[in-house]
Length: 135
Image (cartoon, rainbow, N blue to C red):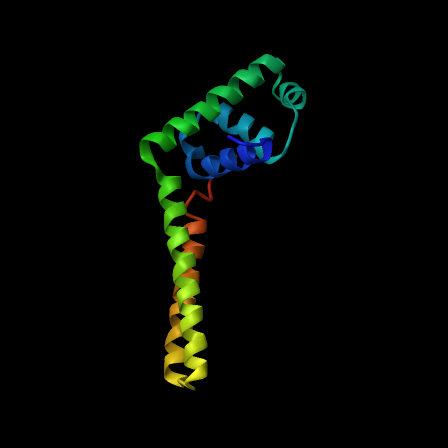
C-alpha cells in the first residue's frame, strides 16, 4: 500500500462493502478511526479501553476486511464494472458527437436514453457496498 491516504481510502472502500460482517466493536473502532479521523487516544477514551486495545482492534478489523475481499472479491468486481461503465459512457459521448455532426435527432435521443441508464446503473453500484453499516 502506498501512502496513508491510499490505505485510508482502501479501508473505507472495504468497510463500505463488508462492515456488516465485522463485529460491532470492530465496526465502531474502524468507523471512528478511518471515517471520523479519531485518534487512538480519543477512541480509547470514548470506549473505555486502552490505546493498545484500540490498535489491536484496528489491526484485526483491517485484516478481517482484507480477508473478506480476498475470499469474496466484491470490491474488485464493483470496481471493474464501474470501469466498464466509464468506458461505455465515453463511447456514448463520442457517438453523440457523431450524431450531432450528422443531425441525427432520433439517434441523439437514443444515446441520451442510454446515457441516462448507464448513470442509473452507476448510482446503483455506488450504493451496492452497503448503506447500512450498523453504526
